[in-house]
Image 1 (cartoon, one colour):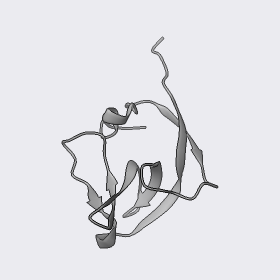
Image 2 (cartoon, rainbow, N blue to C red):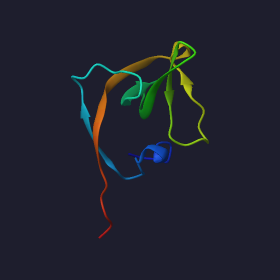
Image 3 (tube, helix red, strand yellow):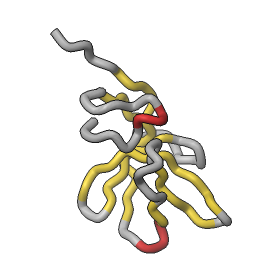
Image 4 (cartoon, rainbow, N blue to C red):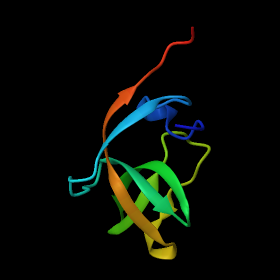
Length: 85
């Protein structure tokens, strides 16, 4: 993981993610998705009947999925925090 957008969900810069590509995404799942040509990690949510990808940091606005090209790559199952040596 690179960046601070998911810190509110316990996912920090430098973490490793275990992703399951066989799970059907549901609201509340943390997803790895290809968004406008870049991989991103966000929480899937339905807001007022519309799908969004949401960060865990209030500095980043929810991303409406009706206005962009998005392909779900998988559902995050585990987060691995590495300690500095």
